Image (cartoon, rainbow, N blue to C red; front, side):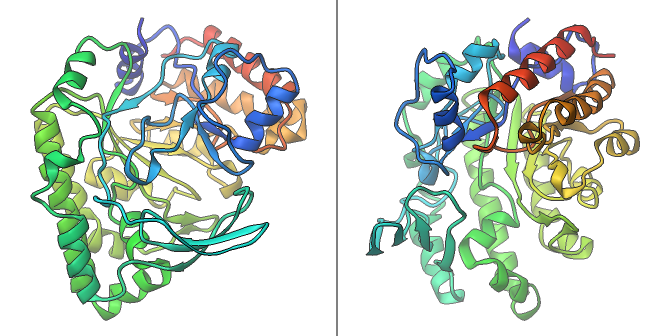
Length: 394
């Protein structure tokens, strides 16, 4: 059975011999450590990576374009553990186009301060070992939004956003063995707007200038509808990806009423169209404690959520019991990997229960950190593979 066939069965809650063997991804320092500790190098990485640089796994949509074209995939992890073929997304830029020109403002031995391709001014460590400090965002007011809307989100430039020949790509994936996705990070209606105006500014705009928020959301929705209309005319898709990092450990960053007012209408419009074109699976990638967000996302048509961070107190067993039809991916506490085998086994007991209930693909609940040894990861992944092979779904 191919990865595509298995994915569609699992997310449709159909009986299946086993679920998929996938991982979400790793930090660059993790992969570098594992090579040093004995992971077999077959293909290596497409480029050298720093400690805090993301390296994608099979459960991450790939490839990325626009502001994300430099990301690489950890194919040697897949090889060492015989993991299944992962997601592929169409090579397309769904975000700022053309991108801004990068310009360095200040640089020393440790830090770089610059304007990035997304127009955001950041100060960051050169090894990316910590989150950057966001200093300035491209949209400051209605005037700057109108300018960027015309220059970077122009609805007339849809065909220019292809990263390669679209017809050739469509032919190459017609008889595919992997799940093919449409849309990608940062498609969504909180995280995307936050990336344009900044988090604090967005919270204020909900009250001070709600019409500006609606105008941004409506224009982005229209852009993604135009793109989706074009792309679905060329080929079919197994899944649509959305991204909304909009929770902390204590729950969502906005209220349910704010979600329904400023996000729901645009999600419904976009998902309704994609459903009319045959797309059946809609996943949102959102960190933090998501339990209060689940009914809101399900209302708009999202039927899969990941990665269910355990350190944010997501109770996966309770979530599965409360939402038996929700597709779930991730949910293994990445922090257990540095604590040792006893804690790994505790997490795997939860994972085993979830697998048997269907609609679930297990893997680490975000990028695996560099404090995880190769020995501990091997223990976790080999035992998880055995559980997957022995735990028939439904």
